[in-house]
Image 1 (cartoon, rainbow, N blue to C red):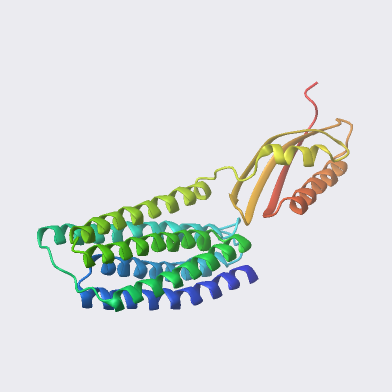
Image 2 (cartoon, rainbow, N blue to C red):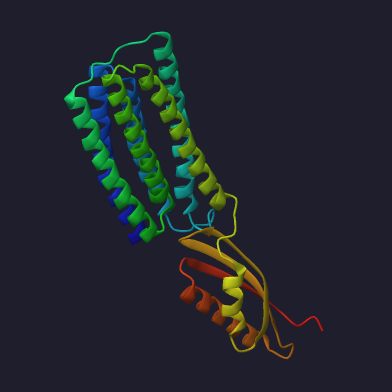
Length: 286
């Protein structure tokens, strides 16, 4: 599937960038003893790990429907976003543990010009990655790319906090390093919550379409008296719809079938992402 191939190409490119960003932060973080920079480096590692998880999930999601998965495998891409959330919670725990350790055993980080250069360069890379990923993710209707972009957005906020901590340490405010590390942990945990919340909408079959956007399109078709019981589920790029329509009791089975085909064709043509429509034809109640 061309869409999935494009998503994979994006993930490979972003994986290389995230790995470079993580390496730069960790090397200078450990070299200078900056807890917040090291914590941010681990956060960036989680970015790279999420890209790898995404590549696996997208590969599975690209498989066509089969006997065991008649609706296809697209939800596997959404499942991978839950894995990212779990990874983020683990990283948040590690960062918080490091901050508590710094409280018990204070250390003075060795802050220099290179520290600021590393943070500002990696921050610029993250901004570019976020802008590109969220744009392509929305264009391709990719749950994973959009979720991963929000993950990267949190990395931008974290990097800004790290820059603040470096400035604080430079002015002798040593406590600012571990305080902002705690803030980083909170930001990472919040990112995990956002991902879980968005993924749950798909995995728990939340409504994708507003029934009021569907009913006028269907009711306008000649031969249909009424449209009701509209339900939808799935992802933005794979929406499944079922609905009821009332028709004249004098209509033949062949005519009703032809009318149902018209309903399906109209919804697929007018509503992006609709891949299947089940139409229940019934006579008027009276």
